[in-house]
Length: 131
Image (cartoon, rainbow, N blue to C red):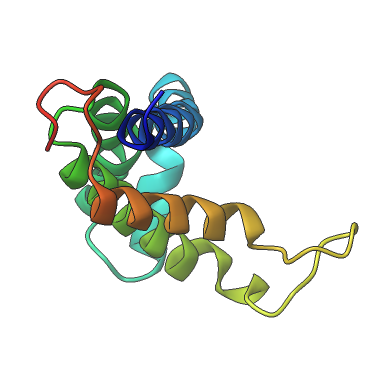
C-alpha cells in the first residue's frame, strides 16, 4: 500500500468518525424536537429560527462528510456549529476540568480540530467527488 492510499484511508476514517459522531447529536435533536435549541437561542437574544441552523452542522454537514460529497463544506458546517455551541452553551466551561482531570471541552475541541483538519485536507480519493 503506497503513502497516497494510506492518506486517503486516514481521511476516510476521519470523515466517517467525525460524521457519524456528530450525526448522532443531530438525529437526537430531530427525534426530541428543536424546541430546546430554539429557546436557548432566543435566550441569548437571537431569533429562534437561527436554532434550526444546528441541523446544517449536525445533520447536513455530517452526511456530506460521510459520503465525501463536498466534504470540505460539510467540515466547515460542523466547525461553525461547534464554535456556536461553545459560544452559546459551553463558555462557562472554557477553563474547567472534568472529574477525570481532562479539559471539560475536550470533546468539543476534538470535533472542532477534526472538522478543521478535514476542511484543510479534503476528503481524499474514497469520496463521492474528492472535493
